[in-house]
Image 1 (cartoon, rainbow, N blue to C red):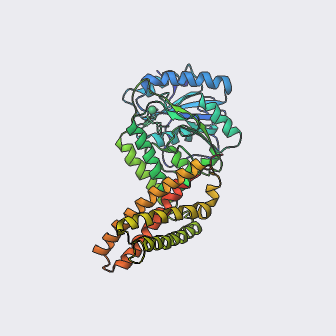
Image 2: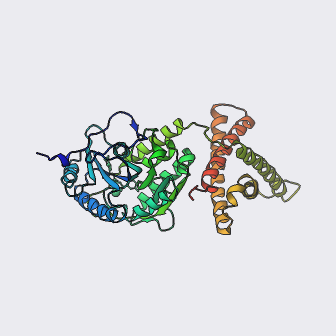
Image 3: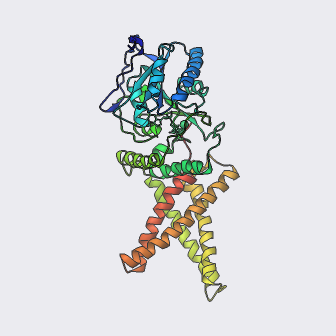
Length: 407
Ligand code: GDD
Ligand code: MN
């Protein structure tokens, strides 16, 4: 017979919406506390007791009685929920939810937030890979005015313990893709993949969240009303028990999630038309420079150098010309914040690589349009240049001249 105190939380159903008001506590009936920390678990039987113990020790010291821990387990085959449930008697601030109809890290966190009583909603992994001591820094960032405080691996003090090159590449690659598809969301933080953060309830209350997969932070930034963001560096630790549940499915879910958020936040949402026009004008100056240098190097009446060599030199000089104008004019507001010569050199190299990729795209599109759509090479070239210019603009905006809004 399970005593009254060890009851599992009932699982919310319907829309993934967090209420403005605070849910009275199942155990004490009291309203409102400072922090509700959700711990999503799947097959964490060997970790969960340690996690609860360490979190309790730390939070009892700093905010005794003003927090709750909510384990949300997706009916783990190793019965993690049952181990957590057996701890409730010893840890009164612990509550446990066992989901049997739904699965998924992101929706688990939201279901936990739906039954939470805290003014601040947080999430931490249930495998001790997110160092608990960072919690207090996140909490103080919120109390100092931030709406969202993210534990980031990509700021000073951040890092990953010993991820394989493949995992690092996949994680960074996913971030770059997200910056291109959904810059208004991923561009606001340095570690959009983080699963370790706190957010003011008021910033996510009322929004109908619709996440898929692992990236709950994208949903909070994409659909919440988050103004100020703070970041705290942390080192993602090695697991001691169990293993990561990240598979290819999470990467597919991630793409699906990006596109869903992109469509729901509007295709041209925040497209900087003015900046794009300046970029186009600079591009025109580059065409002029390219043509002039090509003439001076390869024409019969000038140096008469071989055409390909002349074109490569002309193209590179045009790219340099475009970089100078874009850095000083098109993106001046951004480059002013990053004046160091190393930063400027890094921007030039990124710009160069992106423009060379743009050149390849241009040539491919020219052939595609000319051979399959329009047999006039000049119209086909214009279409190819227009598409390559949008590519050059968008990717440079998101990767070369990018500043996160973190204070
Ligand atoms: N309820 C529930 N349902 N929990 C889940 C599920 C699920 O389907 N899948 C994973 N979890 C829990 C795990 O038990 C663990 O506590 C946490 O979510 C993270 O899962 P891992 O499988 O350990 O992910 P990871 O360590 O590779 O990556 C984590 O850290 C990254 C950096 O913060 C995840 O949180 C990533 O989202 C995050 O980017
Ligand atoms: Mn993990």
